Length: 232
Ligand SMILES: *Cc1c(COP(=O)(O)O)cnc(C)c1O
Image (tube, rainbow, N blue to C red; front, side):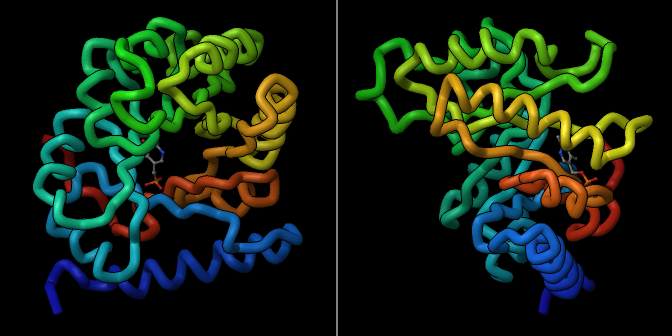
């Protein structure tokens, strides 16, 4: 057993148990939830141990780090979810390893993620629209009022597949109320795009609330991985 395991299997089992409990409390089937383990700042070796424990969906928030890890772990059947703020000039590179980008928040990024030669190049990339639930335009995410027009620009590109919406609950908000707001935007988007049924919401501290409000994709880091090593 690797020393990296160090409680990992137990924390994973514990979190999965809590996910299943929250799903049942919400009258939902736990099997319809995708648990993404956010592995940012942790080494590829830890991701390999997670894979051996059955994890297949992992999340990263920095391109450089995600590219290096996905490269090192190319022998494993992992789906990489990009969840961090993304500069347009790195979009094409992220597409090379990512199965999904959860942080699409502006039309210029949609354009950069698109493949110029059309869908023949590759399968469509799964896209989530990141919502900014605060009044601070400096935070990542599209303002709620602009979410529908951003959805239209994703729908117009055949190399992108609009899966749904994503959000981080603001620190000063009650998470359940924040996730209810996300669900309301999701309902609006679904009127335009009936297949965009996914809601990427819920982190270590608030995933149970997110499940109660319809989250389908949970992005869970520290509750599973333990404390992150400091950056850099
Ligand atoms: C780091 C991160 C997470 C996971 O956060 P934890 O609190 O460690 O569970 C989820 N979503 C995004 C966008 C993140 O950057």
